[in-house]
Every structure is written in C-alpha cells, then in structure tokens.
Amino acid sequence: MYRETWAEINLDAIKYNITQIKEKLPQETGIIAVVKANAYGHGLVPIAKKALESGANALAVAILEEAMILREASITAPILVLGFVPAKYALLAAENNITLTVFQRDWLEELGEYQLVKPVNIHIKLDTGMNRIGVQSKDELLNLIREIANNKNIRITGIFTHFATADAKELDFYYEQTERLEELLYVFKKQSKEEVIVHVGNSAASLRFPESMHNYIRFGISMYGLYPSKDVRQENSVDLKPVFSLHSRLIHVKRITKGESVSYGRTYVAEKDEWIGTIPIGYGDGWSRKLQGMSVLVNGRRMPIVGRVCMDQMMIRLDEAYETGTEVVLIGEQGNTVIEMDEVAEYLDTINYEIPCMINERVPRIYVESGKKQSD
Ligand code: PMH
Image (cartoon, rainbow, N blue to C red; front, side, top):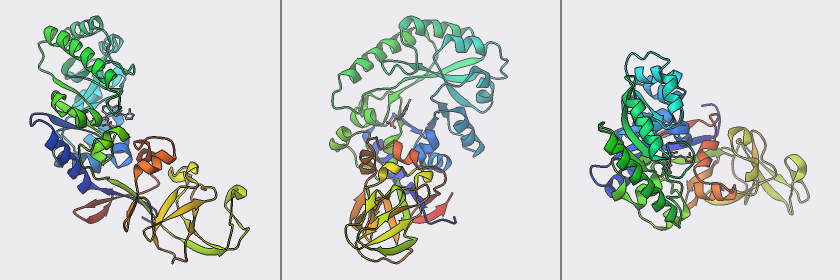
C-alpha cells in the first residue's frame, strides 16, 4: 500500500453480526451469506471465508464470475448464483458445483443443446411481487417442473423468492407476497418429489420475522452491520456492528486568507482567514463530487469538505492547524464522534447499501481480525 487512503474491514464485526442474527433464528434455520458485488464492496473472498467460519452455511452471489472467484479461492461451501446465467455456462457451473437460478422454459430448451457431464443444480426463482425475475403463475411453475423432470441435465435443489418491501413501515405487500409464495410452494410440493430447500428472507425479513424464514435466510446488508431501513433500525431488534470504515490522512495543511477560494470553479470562498487541509481521496475513488459540504472527522471533530471534490483529492476546513499525516475518518468513529454510513447515504440521497459498493478498488481494503490489521 503506497497511499494514505484506505478502508478498514472489521472481520470481527462480521462474526458478531452473524452471531446476533443466529440468536434470533430458530436453530434449524440456516444462513446463506450474500456476498455479491464484491461482498457489498467489502471484499469477496475475505468476507466469504469469515462468514463461513462464523456460522454461515452457504454463499450467494449475483453472477457466475463471482462464484468462480470463490471456487478459485478453494472455497467448497455451497454457492448459489442469484441472477441470470446464460444456459451455455451451465456446464461450467455443474463442473464447479455452483447452483444456478432458473425461471424460464426458454433457458431449459437452450440447455438441451448442450451435453453436461453431470447435472447442474438449480434453485427455482418465484416472482411473488418484485417483477424482476422469476416464475409468476402456477401454470408456469408446473410447466417448468415437468420440463425439468424430463431433463437429466438438471436437478432442482431449492426454491426461493425475494421481498420488495420487507424493510418498509407498511407491511401489507409483504403479507401479499408471503401468500402468493405459500400458494406456489403448495403447487411445487404437490408436483415435485425432490427434497428441496426453501429460502425467502433478506435481512429485513429475517430481523422482523425470524420464525417464518423456512430453511435459510439470505443475509446481506445486516451481516455488514447496517440496517436495511430506518424503520427496521428503529425497531431495535438486534445490535449490529458496522464492518466498513473509511480513512485517510492530511497530506497538506495551509492557511488561506479571507476572500481566497478553494478548488475547481471557486465554489468555496473563505469568509475569514482559515486552515485548509488536503486529503488524497476523490471521485476517482468513488467518493462522489456530491459530497461537497459533508463532514469528515479530524481529532474526533467534524470538519466540512469545502470546494469541489476533485478526482484524486479534496479539501476540508480545519478548526486549527494539524500536522500532515494526521488521520482523517470519512466513515466510522474517531474519538467519541461517529460518521455513520447512513449519514453519508442520506447526504447523497441514497441507501447505505450503495456507499461501500461505490468506493472502488483503488481504495485498498485492510482487514482487521482479532484487533490485528492485514492487507488483502
Ligand atoms: N436475496 C436477493 C435475491 C437479493 O437481491 C438481495 C439483495 C439479498 C438476498 C440480500 O438482501 P439484504 O442485503 O437486504 O439482506 N439485493 C439487493 C439489490 O438487488 N439491490 O439492493 C440489494
């Protein structure tokens, strides 16, 4: 690591968060750790390993590439790809014991064109209201099951759905989805002789309805120590520890005089003489230009980002002179003060999920385990 900006990934917090949810779940309900999108920006392989070590039973990703990276890292746990994978890659999935998500007859037809040495395991996706991917009607489901029964290349090992509003205040639609789910599951179980696993709940559903999660939960955002929404957070049903924090250092400190401006476009003009610090992070790292005006922490105190955020650097107004090398916290705790992921998300008018995903690979992830730091 040659730069003064890094993200700290607290692996002990992954374990803590998994332990917390386990305490709420019935003993027989397992955990699929959702590690798609580079483990929500936290780092795919280290998070997957830590989640499994902490009691998760399986992993879920969005695309086949992510599953292959996990297999190449010698991870042998079950892996489910939640998103669409073209049928021509079913052989690769089968060879690597990667489970695919299936919901279309066309896909099965296309699969028929390929010779598989061993059957590919699949989970059927039920669309109970997201209108994203999945089987919607009983007839569609019956057709799919019949077609699969005639196909030696494929084996159903699971069935699942996804909720659109499990994190909302108003839960009417959640209940509507669970009703449609039960109807489709009834049809499935009547028709199919296969012993399959059923999983339905994301973090919000698992926190709110731990008793109704069927065989597994798909645990994403709250494994990373974040709440799926304000409403769920206010319910205070579980204690979580944030995994991701973002750090940098002052690399330059100077005094400017009243009337001087800072950065491109001169959007900030000093109203009096003041101290300005430069930090080596910018929109080229995924730290959005829209964060002008947001605070960061220096010496446990909030200092505002002044002037436009540049590609690789930005400036902050300091309350006094600090030495270069002083640590700056952009997300996380310093002293008794904290800037939460939720605060950054709110400033950007988005959700906490997007923030760690947004901080790109130019920012090294430093893993902290049992209080010790190690880089990727
Ligand atoms: N299962 C599926 C199918 C998902 O798409 C997601 C998250 C999860 C489980 C985990 O949800 P959680 O992080 O709320 O626990 N998917 C997304 C998404 O597509 N956009 O934001 C989150």
